[in-house]
Length: 302
Image (cartoon, rainbow, N blue to C red; front, side, top):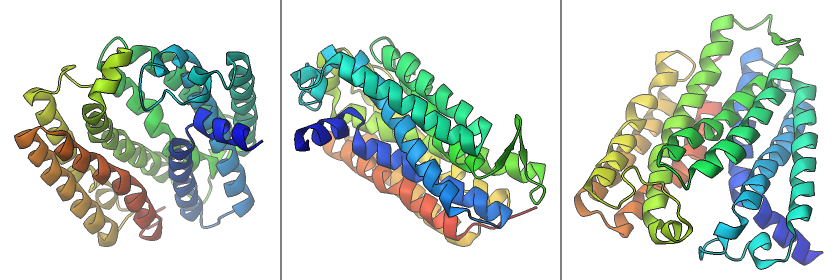
């Protein structure tokens, strides 16, 4: 049982899954605060449903890449490349998680369930095959990667067919808030994934993955990492601009964006794995920290 739990955690990429669930959960709470009422049972359902949906997408990803994972040090010990789990077993688990997780999310809101299915398809069956073909995979993958805030936010609202029951919330609020959350997470992924791709370039090359903008660890790629890091500064002002956050969030976001830009500039100048790691580690704390601060600095508007 202990070995199965360990392999299951690796199949669903537990740390990544928990990060995604955290993002969706925070957005759910923001949507609930927008309405003035947090239903904690629904939050729990969203958390469990989001966990299974994300685990399903990651499971399909590992099934598709099982032969490629053997070629990389960072993935060689996963259950499928080592033979500790068969493809059939992984497929059954992934299908079950996808169906069960989606049904839970549909119970909360039809759109949340629909977006969860879309995220699985886009991540597992579009982004995953593209990783070997073109650097555009990072751009494509940024869409399912940024869907958790939308799923979480909309899950906080009761379904009314294809729409919502949101008498206490204006249409502007229910459109602007989640899409700003989406944009922050969307733009964050570029310095995050490009920095990771720079550090793990040799490993990725062994599997034929092409994730760096120019496919090389060159000056153009380094400057694109810097530019993507700089973009986090204006993106962080969007909640203040649209009136649903105050200066606490904006200050934290600005400091994080400036740190992103500083390390991005260092990397553009030096182009080393060490400088890329600084961008990467900044990305690790930036998103969860700013999302948490936004939750407490959130200003509901009608």
